[in-house]
Image (cartoon, rainbow, N blue to C red; front, side, top):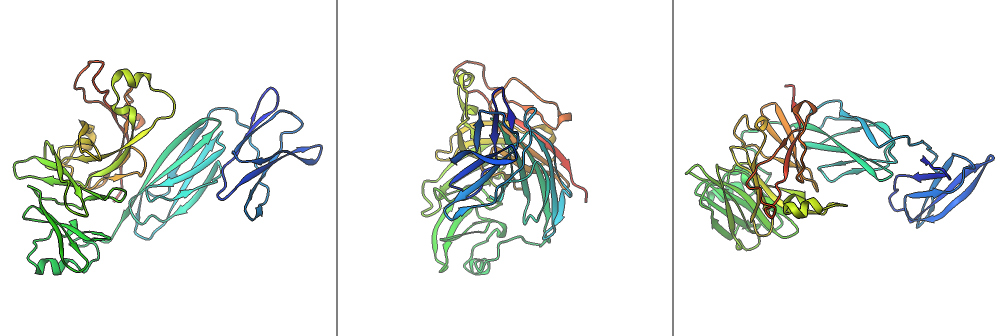
Length: 403
């Protein structure tokens, strides 16, 4: 709630399955309706008869209990704290997320697993049990401003000599003469995709028949990235000459095969990012851009030397490439990288016990130092006004996990 010269501005968190809200004001000890059939989550009250309000959510089957939680906004939205009780847990264990926000009318948490926890209090905590590497993002909104802060949890899984999906395909494939790289097995509705040591990628259906087999001029060492929406499989390739490739094809037919070159072998699995469109606009258009940022999906890959490539997901044309910050290139990049769904953020393993989070951002003139856990790195290819402006790779945090 924010006080104005003539009354109050109210905002509240959305409730699932709500068709409309009813807002009441406490005046002289009695609740009086000041808004009915409200479909938005905000209301301006043009009186100062009382500063206590309550909101009732109504849906198809009636109205719920009124919520009374009045707090005066006295400044911008802020996240004072967001942390997990443990940065690392064993598989099946829980950790506690705790947060403290101020001046927020809507607080919620999203995860890289697609979960959304809505209607959270300004100050609170909750227990979570991530089944895999977890990225939890606290979002605080209010009166036109928003702040997001992320926390990560590493899940230690039982180690196996060969990490493969549970599938009945592996031995039959080897019996058919395929020298299968076990960790590349990727089960799909059509069957299973895999790579072999003799530089091929293939799809075998559930009856054990080969649907297609494609030579890729290099070794695919990890699972590919499958985009369900368009049926495209993208994968990283390492070559004997010390270079690599990012390739894609139609998983149904094995056709529409295309590749781009990388300077060094590509081992880590490709990943999808949603990057602000202004990141790739010309300098002239980028400087004129304003308002809500549209985004575009790009397929990304990092080669062993730490060079990031951002490519159009449909054409595979490279939109931008740049070296990652030196801090994350301490060792060769071979571990798979986790992308936060629907954002430009990703997390990568730097060493056995070190992790880093980075994001792709539109060009700016600022640069933050490492002491604040952010750092901007730009690669410059030209300075002409009609050349594309170069996106900024920000190092958001760098953590060492205790063993």
